[in-house]
Image (cartoon, rainbow, N blue to C red; front, top):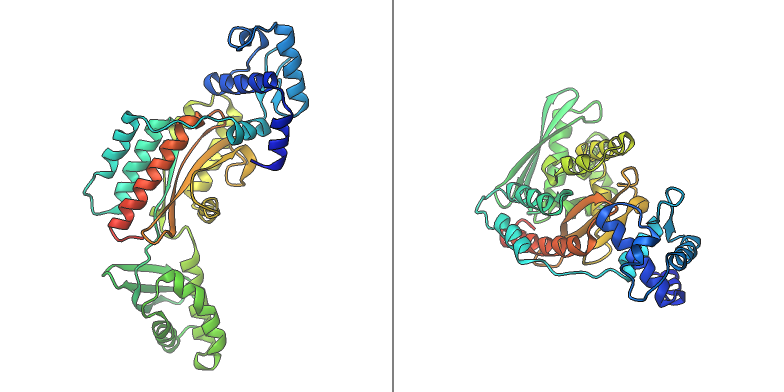
Length: 357
């Protein structure tokens, strides 16, 4: 919790804290504003509706509750949901049924890790009635060989051969004026640097190597290397990296045209893989599940949605991907957080065992 949240909670009376918690829980359960009269039946102490309304007004003044319509009850604001999630949420454990459903998807012997992760995404969206996102690991085996092949004046094929025997072919537009000689020179330069390195490691060092060994590589070859690296750095180039399932769950929950438009905008962005880098950045500040509500991160600000996301790691404790659930801000956080956490741990173990991380 932030210092401001801690101070706000500490300054609230037990009565205010209970009214706040029950309003949020009622809203998360039904999606409807919670009225003072309904709380008179659930409060631990006997209170009149007028007393509860006064408490609600105080909470509204603090920016924790809002009244969408006159005398229609209260709903939590984004700040209120944030404080509830950080300070008052009871996180449950994964139920036996949910655990069995997740375990079943990871028990597949399919050699294609992307296919297994697709099953994981489908199971997550089914269990949570939200949309699931699974960010598959990048291929990070050491590079054995790199080759550039000219296909046309404006198209070059780069062939990447990895030490584990996998081969990737990618086509990109080279800088103008490339010659067979510059293609060979660029490939020789990269192969001298790449031995034993993964793509990520090569990207991290090649810029410094170009600057240090500028005399060894001519301008054309240098520009080819740099444009090829720009392609490899494109986080959306491997289309199978971001697996999205359960979009229909969000659309089914949204009756308003504006809501549907926002959801379409969100998933158009995801389909174009425009924000995979930002998505992975969400998880890289540390271990464990993170919750983003509404506009707290730019990837989901248009959708009015919440994201529950957790990174998963390989055997070396390095973050290599992420698992998440998107839904309306009134998600059942107490149930979904442990489901996402459990799934991320299992996926990390599976990927590590199959040597993809």
